[in-house]
Length: 140
Image (cartoon, rainbow, N blue to C red; front, side):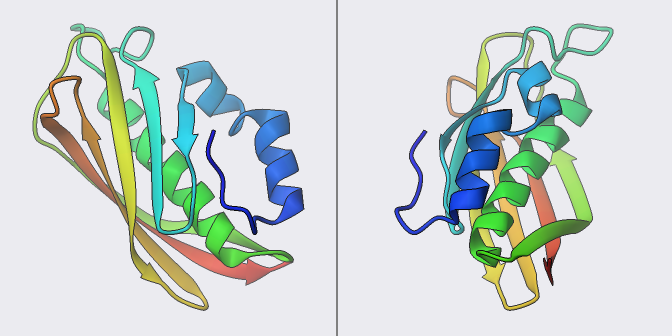
């Protein structure tokens, strides 16, 4: 996993120790690159499908929220943390197998709020969903 050099050591320890959290581990999310402004992760479709065999819409959202939350926590810095206050998703296409890749870009990196947009794509590069998340930054 690629991380910025100036990352809060406590956050690095948490990411390494939990591999992104229990749900991310259960879903097979692999964080490839993490920063406040640009993050990338991959997730298998297998194990995350709904009853008719398509990648579950909630899995898209978990992937987007995982990236948006970690990206916001990186921006928050030492002694602060991020709390999600809003999320929405638009699903444009379905997928039945393979691996999806999510790219998270910062829209706003403020003192108290961060907003990120994550685009999930299939192996052919087709957009599957767009997730927008806003996090409130708080002091510990």
